[in-house]
Image 1 (spheres, rainbow, N blue to C red):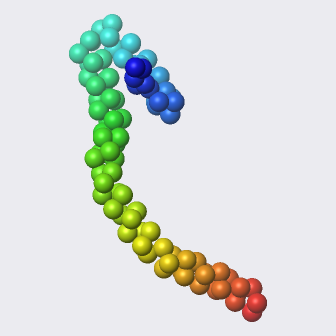
Image 2 (cartoon, one colour):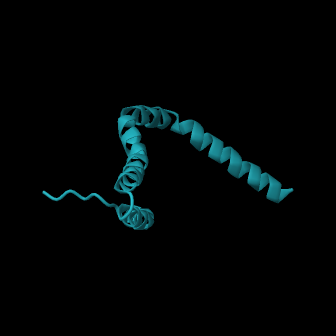
Image 3 (cartoon, rainbow, N blue to C red):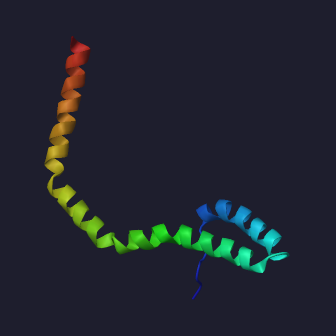
Length: 88
């Protein structure tokens, strides 16, 4: 089993952090560890929160699907308003 730690979109943000960590590690290993830990916590906090709210998001999407007819009706009103604007 392979665990993928770095996503492609993270690589651009992680490269400067690793550079700072390598630079700091020669003089202050505690600060280097703190920088790396803060990056990890900040980066993955959003992922953890999003995963925790998945059931609420699914309930919202289910409610949105029930109200789809209102979105279609509103879209039709926008199109009719555009046709009216072009016609006059």
